[in-house]
Length: 247
Image (tube, rainbow, N blue to C red):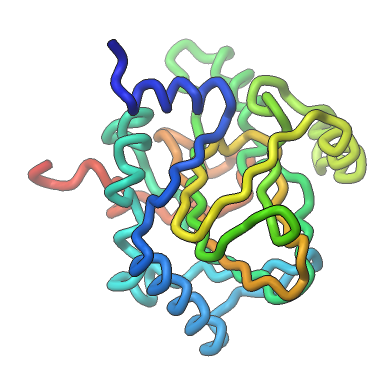
């Protein structure tokens, strides 16, 4: 009989995403929320983009004592390890605040997934790279407040309008909007784990809602630096949470 983790991983492969309820304790959730707000007050953000997303790429390095436990967190580790084992590598660590109106553009985190699939078939020993996203939420989302939306079965079919590069943004977004969707309403402390190549969109439905999260991107090595991904890799040393000496 398959274990509960195996059953949930089967669901992840089928749907492209998995909601892990209560991944963080209330204490962990509030502490992380406060530290992200502290970073905002310190002016540590990298920028605020046109869709209302403020992002922070340096918090893991600035304050590892507050954020390192989120990398391969105890309640998320069984899923990451069950998929990738010791080859699971942290690609990037990014916090977000949405200080005002926020409607994220439809996008994929790993745009190059299908391109790399084709490339791997050209070489006898090439391995197809895989990306996994874990997003921790620090406020309650709900109807009328905010949500996370996926293209249903969007991890199983290469979307149009990705090629030739650069992406045909209006065509891609129109295609995503026309598909059937699955909408999630993560609560504070929840983690949404999903395949990085599934098209998705976050949003605030209420402009005054406080909304922040932390995204850990993981990759199954090897993934070369030219892979078409939204985040820059952190490097190699110290980025394998499940391959530590003595484990």
